[in-house]
Length: 216
Image 1: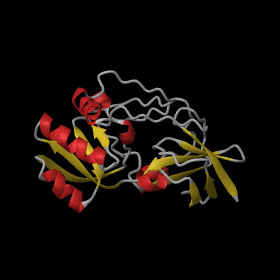
Image 2: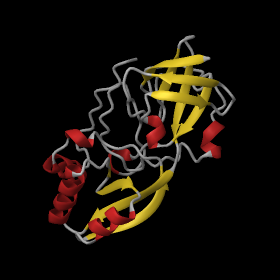
Image 3: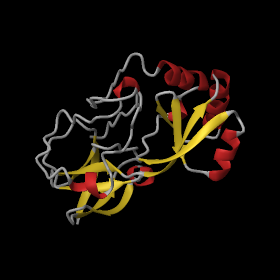
Image 4: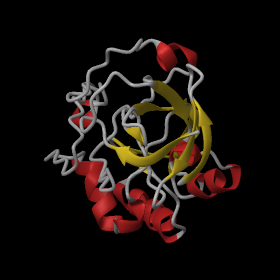
C-alpha cells in the first residue's frame, strides 16, 4: 500500500498527479487514515502532524508521485456584521471559542452550526447559509483586532510567505482563481471540478490565508 508521508503546497510540487482526492475541511486536516482517489489509487496518510491542506496542495507518496487535493464543498454560514463594533464582538466570541473561521472579504465563513448561528445573529449580524469549500485562517493566531483589520482592510498588502502563487481573480484581493503556477496540470483536470464542484470552492473573496507547509 502506498503511503503519503509529506504534504506539498500548491506551486511547490510538479505534476501530473497520480490521482486526485476531494476532501472536506476535516478530511484535509487528518494526519492519518486511508484514502482512495477518483481514479482508484488507494493510499495511507502517514504525516508527522495534522496540517490544514488547501485545494491545489498535494500529498507526496513514498514512490515519489503526488496526489492532488481538492476542497469538497460543505455546509457553511457566511456572516456579515452590521457594524464594526458587531464585527469585533463576533470575532472575539469566535476566537475565544477557537472556532475555525475564514475571512472572505468583509464577511466571515464558519462551518454550519445552528446554535452558534443563533448566537451570532443575536450579535447584530446577518447569516447566509452557503455550500463551499472551507479554508479557514490560522484563527488560533489572530487577535480580534487583527482579524477585524483583515476583514476591513481586506488584505491591502497580499503577502504569501508560503509557496502559494494563487492568482486571485475576484472579490477582495481578487478571489481565488488558482493559477497553480508551479505544477503542470497534465492530468485530466475535469476530475473533481465536475464531480464535487471542487474548484468552485469559493475561497471566493478569501483573503490572506496563512498556509505554511514545512514538512514537504
